[in-house]
Length: 280
View 1 (spheres, rainbow, N blue to C red):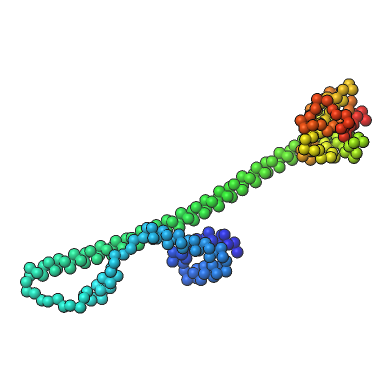
View 2 (view 1 turned 30 degrees about the horizontal axis):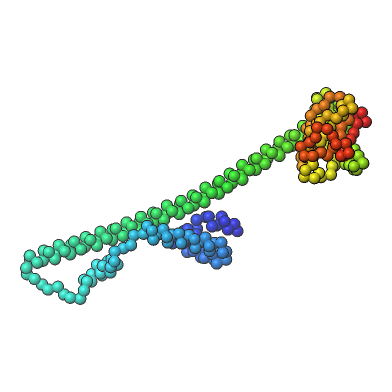
């Protein structure tokens, strides 16, 4: 059973407000006994309703219940019998007083009933507002989740498009893969430059290079007319896939050295890890 759906269904509010059917009452009590989450939510609703009732409730006048029962049963208040009097001047005030008391009681009863009706309306509005707040929160959560999924989908789509473009680029008839194999220092290190003189583009594929120290960074070089030309530094974290690198005209070879972070104007020759000839 989905407890959260049951808790937000409104049946607990009906139970706490005394509006549930006998079957619903048995169901709520059984669920509250079996699941602590239901009991906790039910207690919270009851406390809220009690606080709401104390804040907005209208209490009946003192002694109103006894007065109502006396009038219904036809029993006069007190045990003393009224003494007959032939003085009409005295009977008229007593009759006026009785009528005034009766009208006051009726007004008190009407006020009490009106107060109860108002309280019931306030409770109904409160329960509706509580359900609306929960529904709004659930809609916002679902909308946030949907937006995140859309962003993730767009990111994956962009990544797939980029990989597809790179795949097309390396299969182009003008693309030449230049393999750079490990030097004595690099051992089994290996990388490839996909150089295309037709499209004037170049891609670097780092297959294997040792993880550099925090203050070091790998730098790619093109050897042109026997002189090294800087092609930029790169991070291994970005190497699952191909990296775009500057296109260099007429290179004889490519090489990778390990340099201080940020790169060097000239390569550190004793830190060369891979090298490969374009003609080879």
